Image (cartoon, rainbow, N blue to C red):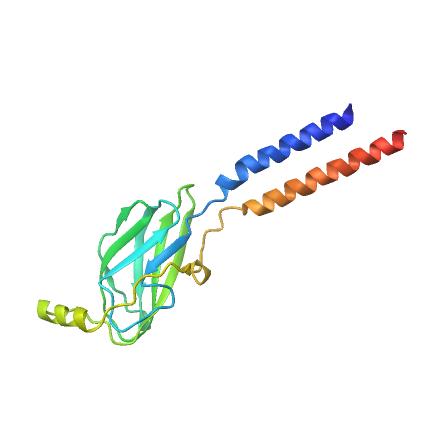
Length: 190
């Protein structure tokens, strides 16, 4: 009778862990970006775009672009459509390494801060006239976004949950231990 209760409790515990572990550990993962992670651009983009695997909302000051010597780009108010954020940018600064930092809130409420890194091979200076902008856009086209996952290189500050596989592993170990204990108790009674 005790074995049946123990096994029932173990199965219920496993079901509870499996039912709640998945949604509790979901985070907004970046699936693509423009500029792409590690891209080398001949000309600075006029717009940045971030696409996530789930809809997100924005934190205050959600997007910033910083270049060599701390040069910051002007970023217009971003727009969010489903899982994609886009914002017009006014580039400035010398050639070199740039970091696009983003701050979003995932569907489950976790705050995610991460970055996409790219390089400009020419100075990033805003167009001074409309003809200069037309010449720049026809002479050099930025590298398009890729579907490669930049989250491997992005540094995420979201430590708000244990991955689902950890909970599943714990549940399997608990159930296995309960079965071993039940079998040993049964053998000692015989």
